Image (cartoon, rainbow, N blue to C red; front, side, top):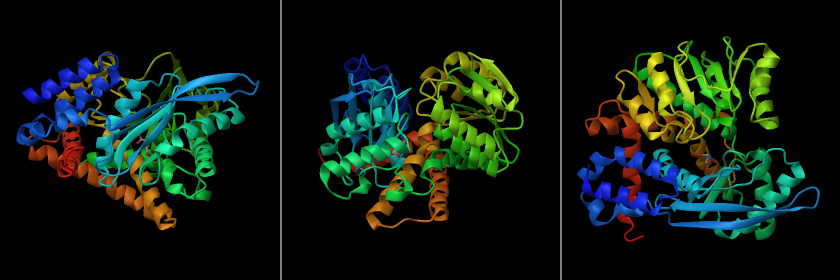
Length: 450
Ligand code: GLU
């Protein structure tokens, strides 16, 4: 391996020994960009890799809130402004019990390259809290969000850092966070946050964008293989906002999501989650009980298998892991390899462990697409929301959807061409990583010492 590259990886492992997810993502991205680093000796001279793994800054703050019984709770909040070479820091906030510094940092690192792939002027950031939204009342969520924003507001702004949602942060939380920002600053800067409600500057198609974008990307892959989406059966892990968007778009295009998993097991619906009633029920499950997908099986009378995942089933055409990081371990990857399914399209951030990903990528005839490309439509439409806010206009759903579609086509094409340029064939993982990295590196080099 390139000496400079391996030195930076070793250094990262040493400095971040207690941050396994962050080390994992650095190793993943850096193992892909080796041909690029070999071709650009100036990266070493200007220490681009060393700079790339160090966030520009990261805040940790206390978030104190009172529950409905008048009891005090103290959580920890983070915002990581990872890389601002391409634009204001941009990325979501994750509220989840298991969130820690390693997770925020890995997500911020990935976000930097993902955002670069959108082709829009956004840098990479991420934030969150170890607050557990499960079972909290609306008033408790409101108080938590107000306290969170009170700690954060002075570090963000429409030209500085623009948070959005992620797991545990949806339209309701975004509304409370924006309300508190406006109250504290006394200005109308709705471009400070994205994923807003339509009444105060949200973008049409934003809720659907990540899932729709993933399906548009899948269509490009299928087209490359002289195949089509019509009739495809898709297995999706998770039933959050992203999976919901996939179900809607897949249905519109004549495909269907037949397997869905949650923390409690998975269900199999041979007809697909493809009626309005079923798709709305998914939304309802997400809002009321995100830890169980069994209620779907009970309601629609389909098979439910508790306590396991469906990876390895043979009666699908496409796997789309859309739940959490490290969902697919080597053990599951081996089952996927045995299944003979041809398309493995990552959607969630880092859903595959590095060894599982390596095993999948080695398999001749299996097409693997990386999440930083596939799920970039979400943040891409967030950037379009920022444009609409600065223009003080609202674009039509058709216009946003068309731009999203073009963006996803472009991301696929750039990834494909970049891999070809480096003699790697149709390698979407390497192509996506190299293309995103190259863009950020160029901007960093041109901006001097920062
Ligand atoms: N959390 C989403 C992501 O990972 C959206 C971020 C955004 O819209 O800024 O890309």
